[in-house]
Figure: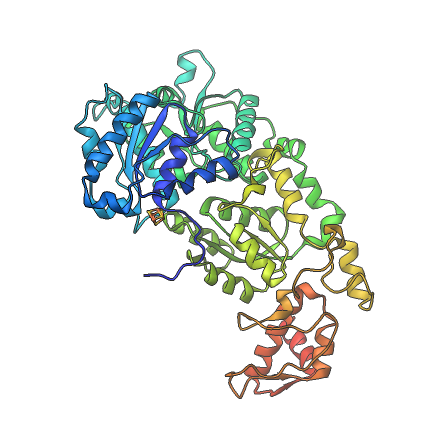
Length: 546
Ligand code: SF4
């Protein structure tokens, strides 16, 4: 058992629903108790789809358990096939149905379905989660449909440069975009346009918008682009093994990553190298100039904490450190399947990756790192709000506002523009930051105030000030100096802030104050200093800036 209040991912059958709902002509029969239809709302309300997801539930009730639930499964499958006439059928179970062990896939295999391809899904709900469920469903569906096309072992591979001999433009598949993914709708548009400008056609986009017949065309492309490894990595690696079809693995989120993506694609397909790719990024994305312009100088070294799915967290860490000049002070993911990649990215930044699906552990790490900006999921938005830290959402899980009406990709050149605006927006603007640092007694522009957000100061005092040992304490109002008594149960050797020390501490801009507080306390602790005065604070400052 694990006490859980919030979860980053749903159960794996929600991942399977994402695949079915993203596609056309696929129907999913889900053996599930009454009430599991709640997942429909993810599609009709968050994705704001104008139709129900293509899912038929068996919706068994307590009284059904005394009877023949297997018969209920068979009846539901027969009715769904007759009513929806799908081109491919998925059959699986939710968590509760897994316990009853009716084996709906085996039951469907024994039925006459009129020749419709049927995929029996084995999704272990007690050990795997939503993204794994989506990846497994997509993989099983593609494998099931393509198994008759798989060439015998030893056959020649699909040559990525064969388009030349065939006298046509190169073509690729975009694999991985799905409903309830982060900005997939607009990423597909952005990358399709980018590829078109480089003379590359898109053959199949899947699962988003594809029909089963489209999946049958996957091997006719020269290469696959794995846009979202959480969903498409197993499929891409199976296509490599079975058809020798190469995969472009760089995910084009950020200017440098988009440049690297184009370089990888160009080399793989044997295209003429684009003239001055660097120039293209300068020309096509405004991020490089915006982040170089003098107004962005104050962004340099801002401390940022990053958490999300592996793909978006890694991309964000590279953009933050290499393109915006932020200092990444924390990096983590809930995607256990891609933990190795996140660990490697964290190592490049001299950090240890946080791999967890416990939002409280993330909140604690966030508080300890005392960042000035959090880039995370919807959960981190809540945690950051509690701690009074500016935050932008970069990854699923998301709320409805992250499925916006306007064009908002994350990938490609325009994606970098969207990212620049979205990440800088929650920060206090440069002039205000400077003025609040200089004049602390304004009745309106108080410490922590961000007037451009219209609602004034954060709802609670900034974490920087409020967090001690990772636990939020009732903080003093802005600008009011109080001696901090030792916390109940704290070690008797914990240093105590004097009034004069606190007053000095409050002269430090709020967004770095937490870091200064922590550094000063550890400085005092190491030297056995019991009381932190203004002098101790400046000694610590001198020590750490050495
Ligand atoms: S079967 Fe699974 S998804 Fe459905 S209510 Fe129970 S725990 Fe939730």
